[in-house]
Length: 148
Image 1 (cartoon, rainbow, N blue to C red):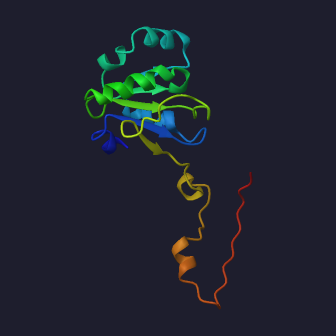
Image 2 (image 1 turned 180 degrees about the horizontal axis):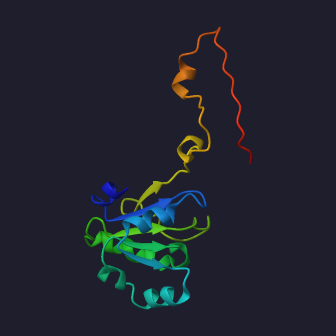
Image 3 (image 1 turned 90 degrees about the horizontal axis):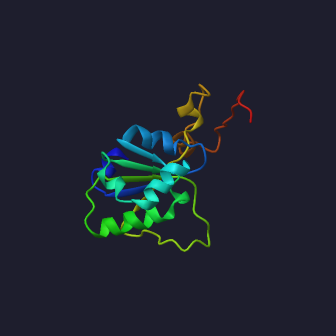
């Protein structure tokens, strides 16, 4: 994502709740605006160009609470917003929302959760490549102590 941001002016990071969108983007961003804070939201609503003066990249977390920020950034991209400028994170917008998709301006990236292996929750794994190499006589089995 960090490399992609160097070549793109604005990125929306999407993914399931608690997958690490904000945490990941906070590690990249130089300036963070939490739009679930009413004072921050009102300040940016009155002066959206404030985000252009922040050290880049700027993270707009919970952007869906201030959809006018999306439109502002979209128009700034049209005007030549420099690469590596803005990251958006937050929940999905409502299906009936009248907000512009951002197509061609704000690039969408999916953040997926870690696998059980990546989380270090188990030591034995069945790898997909192994499944492709099975013969009809091979048997595969396993067990885990992990629960819900």
